[in-house]
Image (tube, rainbow, N blue to C red; front, side, top):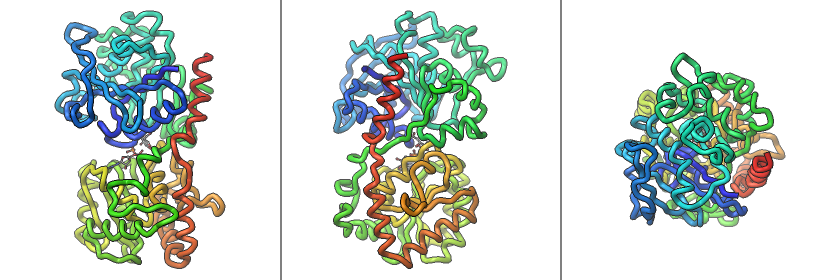
Length: 470
Ligand code: ADP
Ligand code: GLC
């Protein structure tokens, strides 16, 4: 089966968050399982062809006179999965989610359907991700510009975050050949329709990134107005838990760490803790309970309840290192607390892949206080690096972090409040201080939890086989 995975980002070429990691890990795992998967993302002009050994394979293709594009090709690292890069003037000069997003992502979605012909490879399935590429099936099935053959292809849409739905003026669809009568019944206002909503209706299968989030977005306000649309898909809407690339994320080989370690030889982890305390300019203290947090700084990620609980937490022998960028007021609040508690809190306001790995490795525990979390990858990276997750029980966090005795993989709080967050951290701290054997037992246990993409492949195989039989 030939599958074209289309997304706005793919690690290591372009990454803003978890979608980048998924666009690398899942295609690679499916390829190993025997599927002919290829990936398509935009060629943002800061992607350096020499650095990634990319080749220009097609120049100046176009759908309309003014919309010409070129195609570059490379491979996902350490794999034989081809990745194509769409180069066009719409993608130049801005970050992944900056500039005219409507224009650039409609361009990507429309061009995706032409790619197989251009590269001489006939995709059976087009797999779109989030609102950015949700219109791929709409271009295929509601535009006179494409043949019947394209309309009969199979389409999957994976939703990584319902909070972003891409409201687009109807006129923009019409301009690109989409038949207004086929989409206007999904319009929210007289003149705009959400790309994600169209994607849900025009795809054969819709998935999201964890079973709990799949329930939440049908049953609660986290569906952001598309609850009924998802419900109408019946069995064609499912939640499949994301995984991690456990080769790429491995503390025994990670070149970013000052010392490598594994379950059988944990010495290196203490060195990573010292190095992190140094880098964050915190007192070097092996007994301090060092907590990490790596996240985009948005209201989704729970910074409000974290910020409220920090002064109380810092009365204990707790240190914290936070890495992220995003909303100005979150950044400013953290800096303010850091000034007051400089021997307790290290704050890095930047995007830094290497530092993120030093934080997973150097910390004792890892906080994920998200208000909502479709899946979340950081709790799984933390586990792999032996940093015990402390998480709000929501979305994919509820499917990966458990506090129940037998199944324990971390500490969990139910209510989204600074009080509950504080109690969960205190439970973890108590275990760390009062029962070191049990703590190290837990650390070693979570390092061995299998969250690999390979463990998720059976669910994808079922879905793909079901899709082809439809
Ligand atoms: P989301 O996709 O909502 O941002 P995920 O938990 O799925 O959340 O994925 C976040 C990914 O982005 C992880 O790989 C995490 O390590 C990474 N990340 C987030 N912020 C930063 C940052 N400032 N520097 C480096 N990596 C980051
Ligand atoms: C989104 C979600 C995150 C998820 C990621 C990858 O950005 O916020 O929870 O892990 O996509 O699917």
